[in-house]
Length: 282
Image 1 (tube, rainbow, N blue to C red):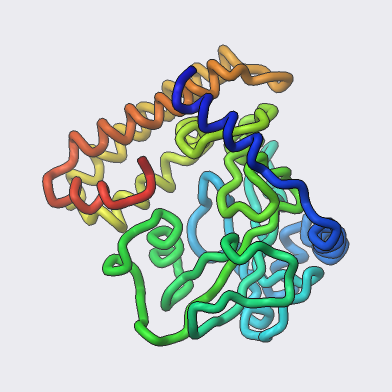
Image 2 (cartoon, one colour):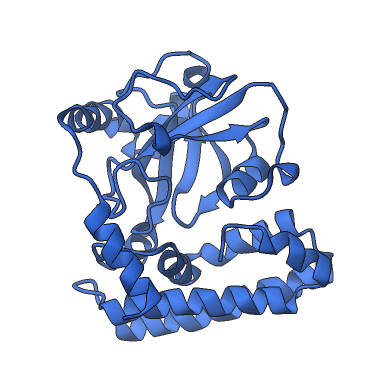
């Protein structure tokens, strides 16, 4: 059994069922955000896009007024998450966020403490990308001792095989391609399949921001991603159906990602390779 299959099997067994309180949170969140399935309504209510379209999260639309309100209401999340599915923007999840100044995560929601993560300093594209990629703090907009934004995701509109409050939902690349997601998906498999679902743009941006290559090197590294994405998209179209994706196919997506990222690192200059090697993208 390959590494991806083992990881997926362990993940599927380890996912806890929602508690009654968490089920109530989902019901309240769905009721409160159903109208935002029309993104124009969200925009009219003050939500604005921040950061890129993440392969495992989609686009973050943030309502600044709710972010600084100091109250966490399940029916009024400060963050909505959209992804292009079936040719249209689709609401797939929400996130709750609050400003914090110490190590204590916000209370008031039935969320495991470990599900929260923080963004230090500014909430912009660069901060979003580096924080979610696991970049060292030196690469992030850190304001030592200042406020941070604590965030927890809730996948209320698209089931997450890894759990309701997991940050990444690797069912997203499957949904974008019209495929049924299996029960357990490793991060490598999700990243690999995302190359066929528009994820090359995100990873090229990640390389540019974190690796800081010059324009010529950036072009070469992005070309590796583009070539892999085109080849994988053709393979997916010819070998997968919406009814089922085999475990062998899932493992092949993980293998594709490992090969592609290894190729990027080999092609990178030493300084860029060192910076990229610190990311949680392997």
